[in-house]
Figure 1 (cartoon, protein in one colour):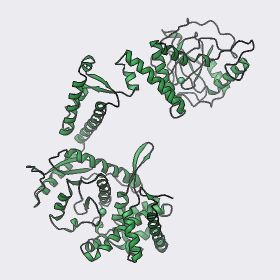
Figure 2: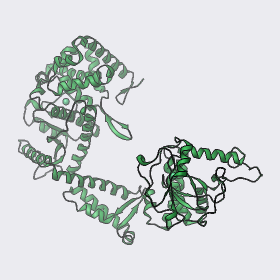
Figure 3: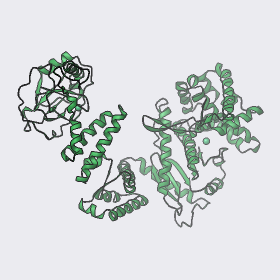
Figure 4: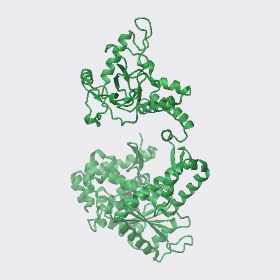
Length: 638
Ligand SMILES: [Zn+2]
Ligand SMILES: [Zn+2]
């Protein structure tokens, strides 16, 4: 019997093989070997002569799916030992898979007795941690020292398995140019690297260095070794695959052009290699061509998936009809939206569920990219909004085509704004790159700076989501309190990226510093809305006030105070008024109930005085924080 501990996962085995025999750890798949020199055998009497002859460079067992090991260190050693002794399983019997089948404590052995390769066995370890500890202790005791290198009773050095770590053996041989050992080292270093990952930074670095070294040697000898390339992070370019992606139907022209250009470049730069390897080419990850290929491939695969979806979802034909109609309506207006001498239709239509993009064409082209870029931001908004409220407020996904009109510059937007003079189009007192039309459900925006576009899309897009949420409450939009409809849009307009569980998400509710200035000045002048008046001020009154130049300050206050109230309820006094309370209030609004009555039904009429006081105090504190420069990226720092 020889004791072997898996270098990668710590699994423990007692095996009957000749020194030097290699086998695969059934728990993690690492290649293990029986130590070449005898290890102290304190528990078992002298082992019977090995059945198999010693093999110096035995082949690694063929890939047998490793299973997850049971948690280490829990099993009772006695139970484990008994189990092992009583229950050896021949290799030909299927080894139980799945953790449910694995005994919690116990060690299963699958001996390779029936296998053609006698020196190759598969062993499954399940929780032998305690047993391993016990063995180590015994080894230490029997060697008469505190560590494995201490001298034995007879004065000679007693060797432990540590001295014969197959890893070190492989490493030395590999460095001396032994190619088989280089391959072994690569595999072992890779396994050790993966078990050290996130647990031991030093080992992680070390083994990374080792496998990178070994795989580089392998690639020198076998330049097409796929595993080595994959582990080095190389990117496989496949000419056939690239060509089939370029042949996909309905791929936008600009993406297809990019891909064809890339294929052309790669063919020119790697002609010989492509020919030799039947159109396959490994590219280094930092390579410009690799990056371009990955990017295009990702986009086209997404496109392929969307194409399948489009073929079966009736939303798409409906949205396309809707978009084409809107595009032609806009085109037949009195205003000419044809830019840069474009002769035919001034708009192109793109559908990204649930949005329909009507993009003004320009000589610069790339209308499809403009639509995708804006769609990315709007999808982030959907994720953010539904992430915050979707479940609580029972929001269902938007299934109605939601129009986004994109104009190419501010002067085109002005054209749109003056093309007729319904209430819908009266400019809002926000410095924004667009607006939402409650009557038509449209968002109209123009290209500006990335930040302005993002803020606008989140703000106006919030109006669209709220409008969807209120779709059954007909006519409620005009009666809705302005503080809620504009405040909530502003609350989402002020968003910032954050990382959660390794994923980028967007968090709303960043402080809008522009609004603070308005609030502080108006408070000093004592012309803020009272708390109750603010709750009662409806959008219909705002629309009238907005056309009256003498009411401009009132309108601006309504916006600023609306943002402040949303911030107050959801962030500033989150514990007291946010969370479920706020969700309850949202349900009122989404059900078409707004104003003071809806507010007090959730927050209580008796609490208004206290809330009003707290709200004004917040305005003071925000003003102070801003003055002292303590607002950074929309958050107050101490
Ligand atoms: Zn293992
Ligand atoms: Zn708005």
